[in-house]
Every structure is written in structure tokens, then in C-alpha cells.
Length: 314
Image (cartoon, rainbow, N blue to C red; front, side, top):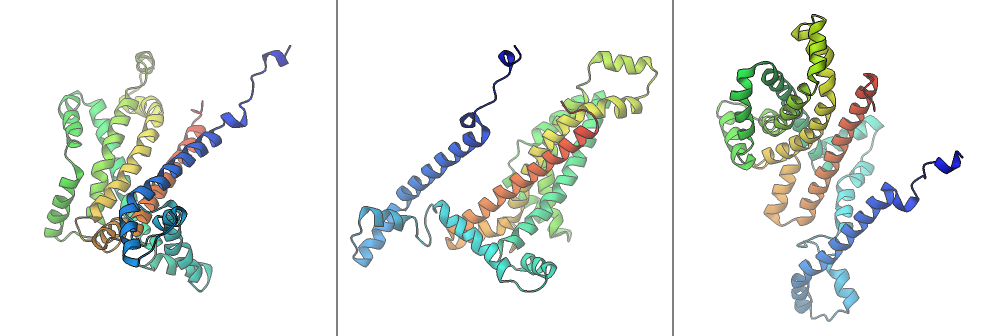
């Protein structure tokens, strides 16, 4: 009888791995086909200039191997990533610590530019998270701020970041503040909003009966916050932090564009656009995507540890 009520285990074909792999293969196939079409005009000019009449296979392979393609093929981006990361790391001599230090300090490598962008991303994320939590606490506990401050918080996100970033950079440079802080402030501007909205929702998530029970026990506002509102808001906080850290990375990259920076993923994008180095641009974009995924995964890992430690795991 027990076997009759056993829940069937999902088959391999219905697993998440197969689903993700299938989507990835479709994306790669569309990407390769798109590279053929977008690079066709340039390849026709190259063949006419050199007097070649390639076969269809040779023509397709040529569209996937141009030095400055309009749309690079995925394997070209992978090679560019390896040349600017792994190859430089392997060529570095010394002890392990020395090799890491030299690799991160090599301005020709992508690790250096990634570390520059990562520093402003993390600083902006930290400031944005603290600001968002502080604003949420004020909005929840002060009724007048809920009606006056919250609309301004929402409307602040309607201003395009590309319009604000140059203003922040120029104003802070006028008072002698340059370097990491201006980029971090742009990241803060993008990251505080999801944290604020998520925390307001989380702090208000306890049911009225639970709040009444705390008041029955003569609990003060600080005790209600620490024992009820804060634990209830943690799931909302971590979800918001995942959005915020990705937004913070976008802010850090955007903050590097109007400064004419020579370091950072934004600088790689800017330099690639100036000189038509599409491989460099796409490698920087892929590196930014990978870094965003890693940062979100780290926040998710911390979330699981904290939630399990507080006994909130479902």
C-alpha cells in the first residue's frame, strides 16, 4: 500500500538541468545564426576585396572569425575572456599570493577592471542597503513620512540614471571628491529603492493579531521591532538585496562612463566603442553578467544561512 501512495520522482528529462541546458542551447543557436546575418555584409566586402569565392561553409566560418565583427560569435567571446584572464594569470610568475596580486594589478587583464568595478559596486550596495533599511524603518514607524517621503522615494526612480550620473560626477569633482565615492553614490541611488520597498513590505507583514499579542505582553516599540517586525522582514530584505546588488553593479558601470575612466568594466566598454573593439566590449559585458550572477548567488547563500539559523526555513 505504501508504494501506491509514493510520490513519483521527477525524471531526468523534467529536471532543471535539462530545462536550463535546452534554453542555453537555443540561445547559442540563435546567437550563431545572428552572427552570420549581421556579419555577412562585411564579409562580402572582405571577399570582394581579396578576390575570393568561398564555399558556403567557408563563408560561415569566416563570419564567425572576423577580428572586428558586428556581432561576435560565442566562441570568440570565450577566447577573448581567456586571453584577458586565464592566459595572463598563467603567464604571471612567483608564489601564489604574488601571482594573484600581479594578476589583479595587470591593467591589460580583465581581472583588474573587474576588481575596480566590484569595489564601487560593493560600497554602493552597502550604502544603499543601509539607507534603504533606515528609510523603511522611518516610513513604517512615522505615519507622516509614509504619506510625504514614500512618494518621493518612488518618484526618484523615474529620473534616468544616465541623466543623473554626469551631474553627480561633475558636482562632486567640483568639491574635490573623485575616484571611488562618486561611482558608489550612483550605485547607491539605484540600490536603495528595492531595499526600501521590500523592507516596508516586510516590516508591515506581521498580522494584526501578532501585533496585538505583543502589546498584550506590554512590549514596547523596540521589542516589537526586534522580536516581530525584523524577523518577519528578513525574507523580503534578502529578495530585495538580490535585486539591489545587480542594480548596484549597473550603477557602478554607468558611473564609469561619463568620467572617461581608464579602469573598470565601464572603461572597457567605452574604449571598445571608441575603437570598434567589439570583442572587448562583449567580453566586458559577459564578465559583468557573470559577476552579477555570482554576487546574487552569494546573497542567496547568506540568505539560506541566516534564515536557517533563525529557524525560519520552510
